[in-house]
Amino acid sequence: MKFAVIVFPGSNCDIDMFHAIQDELGEEVEYVPHTADSLEGFDGILLPGGFSYGDYLRTGAIARFSKIMAEVVKASAAGVPILGVCNGFQILLEAGLLPGAMRKNRDLAFICKQTQLKVENNTTMFTTSYEKGETITLPIAHGEGNYYCDEETLSQLKENNQIAFTYHVDNPNGSLENIAGIVNENGNVLGMMPHPERAVDSLLGSEDGLKLFQSIVRNWRESYVVNA
Image (tube, rainbow, N blue to C red; front, side, top):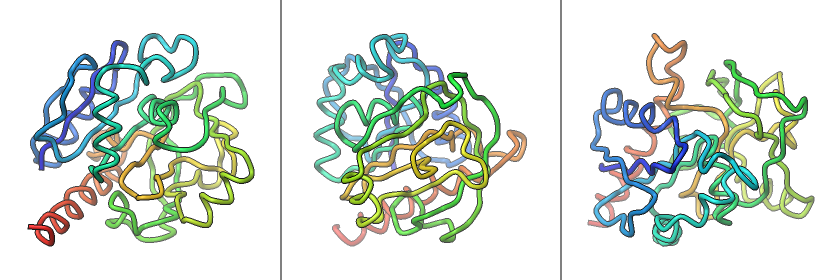
């Protein structure tokens, strides 16, 4: 499986994402600049964390108009697995690939620490290596991770089982219903604030993020075999 790590001006987790895929997962990966006009040949797309375009206007608001995002939108419609982490999640929200919006953290402070998550849905292509209800440990590092949506959208998220992860025990940023990660209705786009790419080796304090990437590869390969 070949992954693209999209690099925006201000991305700072692109190297972490590249390391997770190449060195820990053992799959192919390439950096793709925000100015590129094609994602042909890639089987998975990763939008890393950071401060794209300095987080001016709103987090992800300018990155959403980068040339490469037109191709990300096309890939989403084609069913390609797309993962947006932290700033990547914010970009997916701004692009309309996921519902809702991000607000500043409840305490108006940047948070950087390990946090516990609960796996709410282990049937998506990103979560099948986890057990439903499993508690995992991933780091967070953000100033605007307070997820919000209106009541109708929240009802749809619950009805369609689109809430993939919630914060367990402690809600660090005030996110609605403790939401830490959601998928789109088709299940091929995941946005999450915690960083799985920073939890792929025990030396980093947790290996729990590796299962997410392993899930993507396993489900992609199963789908590839079925459709071949």
